[in-house]
Length: 230
Image 1 (cartoon, rainbow, N blue to C red):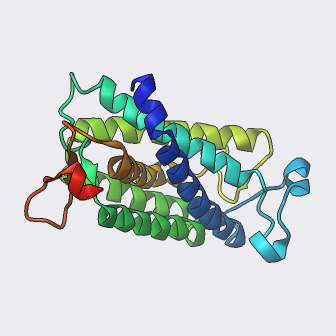
Image 2 (cartoon, rainbow, N blue to C red):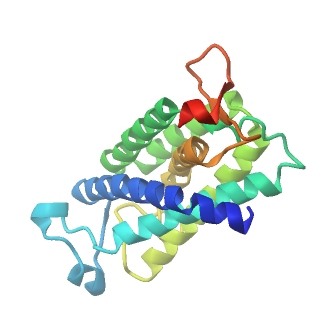
C-alpha cells in the first residue's frame, strides 16, 4: 500500500480501530466476568478499573486492542495489494456494505461472548470453532487468500496472547498450549471476518467509482457514482 493512500485512509482506519477496540474491550470484560481469563500481575492490578465498572479488567487492554486492529487493517490492505498478482482477489478488494459490516460485527460479538461462557470446556469449544472455520472456508470466496490470513491470525494471535501470559500480565482459566487455550486459534477466524468487512467497507475505491459488494443484492457488484455518493 502506497504512502499517499495510507495517509488518505488514516482517519478512517483510526476510527474503525477505535470502534473495534471498544467492542473488544467490552467483550474482554465479559471474559473476565466469566473467569475465562484474569489479569493477575501486580502491574496490571494497579492499572485496573474498579470491579464495579469493568470487573477488574486492566486499563491497558483498550489501547492494546486499538493498536492490534490498526495493525491488522494495515496488514490486510498491504497483503491484498502485494498478492493481487499471484492470487485472485476480486471480491476481497471490493467495497463492502454497511449491512455486511453490521452482520459481521454481530457474529463476532456473539462468538466472543460464547468463548467466555463456554471456556470451561476448551476441547469442545475448540471443536465448534474450528468446525465453523472449515465450513466457512468451504463456502467462502478466494479460499487461498482467506486461509493464508486465517493461519497468520491464528498463529500471531496465540503468540501475542501467549507472550502476555508468559509475562504474567494475563492468565487464561484453561491453558493447553503456550499459556493459551486451544480454542483461541479457532476464534481468530472471527477476527478475520470482522477485519475483512471493516477494510472492505471503508478502504477500497477503484476507477474513480465506488465498488460496493452487497451480499443482500441480486448482483454482487453495485457501482455508484462518486457524485451520487457524496
